[in-house]
Image 1 (tube, rainbow over the protein chains, first blue to last red):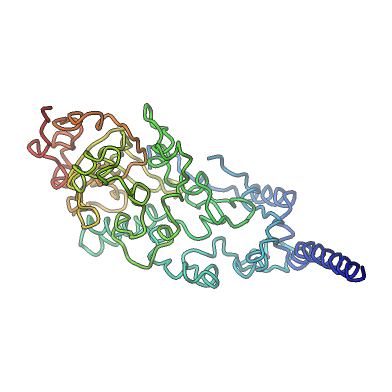
Image 2: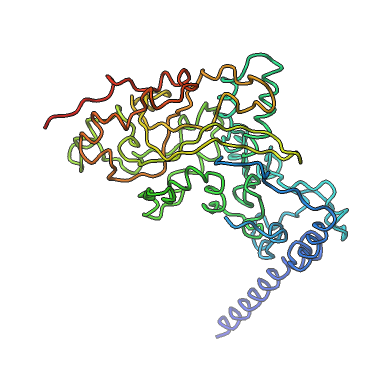
Length: 70
Length: 371
């Protein structure tokens, strides 16, 4: 009985530590890196890509003179 | 293929950090930039969009050295056969040749790939953008990577998109490209191959159809009779795409363009110009490739002055295999059927000399069989 209790307690502690660790991966990366913070936020990226489009309109990827099959 | 919205192209899935290998590497370790700078404008200074191109040694190669060390000879990265064939057709004059070579680099070689442009993003040549929030794809998705580049010929053939032509039987069996084209072939093995047919790990029909030449197999007789005489495609592929007269240049905005004169859906059997121990067949299916004497005329006059060194009808492996085809219906569907063979009349006057070793003369066509 005592052994079973100890096993259960250890298992619960391990599960708790695993969940904390998984959550920490995201949090740590977020805290450490501005790249991660920004590139995982669709809202931020939409804002910035609109800003970029306004200031430097991109060239078309394909020339209008392209014709036929490549 | 639907293009991605600008923000979708660079959106990273936060699930990426759960990749126990790649997710533990800081973004800046591969891409550079300043991960502590909250101002995106300054943070992106020095950022490398694709750190795996042209040299993946210090990024992918730091763990996957066994694969990345062959990068210089991977046909997907260096497009080596393009250089070899264009060099062969090119003028030997150094100045002229250097202009042809520059044009090749800015046009033909823009279609290269890289580790990242198959496993993380769509290839740049088709617009780029992350495949799935920067999650690494062990097997690149066929529609967003393989057929995104190999579109006008392979995709249309494989999916049966050429008018009136059925899809490849392997597509109907739900085969993805990677079923036949294994990683070893894609990554290269360090050898400098002249063309893709020489690649040792390339697909072979016999890998799956191993018993095709056994005397007790189905249709043993025609298979044994035609072994090493005709390629599998001669009997088992249907009509495919042929392109003519490609010219390249730059428009007023400096954007590169190409123009091809025409494309046709046709089927032609020619002589094997790449005969080797591996490919000993006399007759193969030949495809007209887009090259033309004036392909680089925008950059230099008479750049391909040795145009006739190589044929414009090139051995081909159309990706539209069928068990039953118009030419294998009966023996005489092919034997004596001059329409199927590349005759002198089928070759445009200005391409005749280049194709002299591929054109089938009437006496070479197998005679009709009386049964």
